[in-house]
Structure formats: C-alpha cells, structure tokens
Length: 99
Image (tube, rainbow, N blue to C red):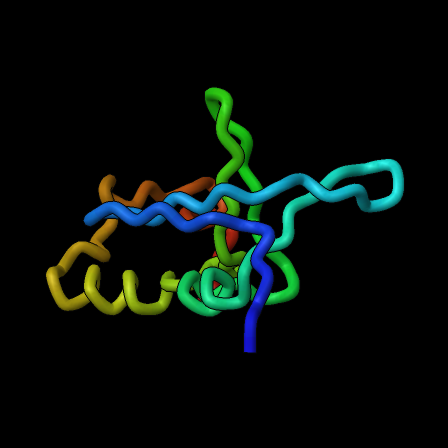
C-alpha cells in the first residue's frame, strides 16, 4: 500500500526537521502535524504556542502548577521550605489576638 505524504523528514542526532506546507483553514492558514510527531511529543487537543525570534514553538500544554507538588517535596526533603525572614508580629498579633 502506497502512502502519499505532504511532508519531508530530515533527521539529525539532536532533532528532527520536518518540511510541511501551510494549508488554508478558513481565513487562516495552519499546519498538519504527522501522527508520529504528535505522539512522540505528547500533544493533546490543546497546545502552548510561542512565537520568538522568527520561530513558532508548539509544546504540550501543561496543567497549571504541574510539578509543584514534587518540587515542594524536594524542597522539604532538603530543608528548603524555611522562611527567608524571621516572623514579624503585627499590631493585631500583639494587641488584639486572644488565645
């Protein structure tokens, strides 16, 4: 079975370059990403798109605060979760707070 591709793959040891064509999508233009690329990178229905210095970077969308729980565990393990400054009592603490 022959498959016709609308993209060329150029490989390198560190990355893969794929030459693809822009396609018309309504009044916009877009790219079709090959399924193996989508699977390799782990893209879902929503992605993060960044434009920088003449490049477009597409990344998997990470959930807000993803990785924070693990980072907190590492900080705690290494005693990095201590206050940077000593606690400073407020007027409320000194005059109004009742135990």
